[in-house]
Image (cartoon, rainbow, N blue to C red; front, side, top):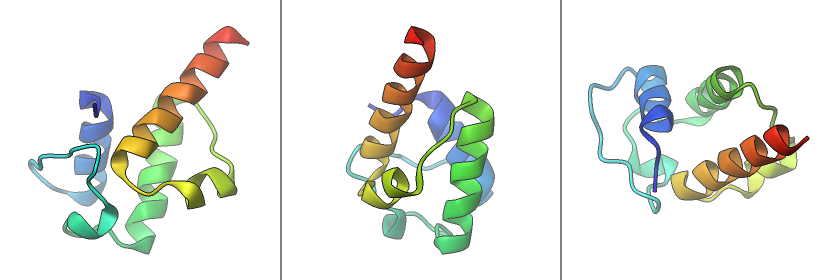
Length: 81
């Protein structure tokens, strides 16, 4: 399930008022989510959550659900370490 925090970041970066983001939602299903905005979204997530992604991790993400799971995994690793 997509957190409200992640949804807010995506909507803010894409200048959208509202959008129903589901685990299966892919970038091509979201208005304005192109390669440039993708980078802006990733940077905004890193700043907001105070985490860092590796390039290979970002490339493996297929949908917003996988992005949420990666964020959750990073947060668990940060709090455990």
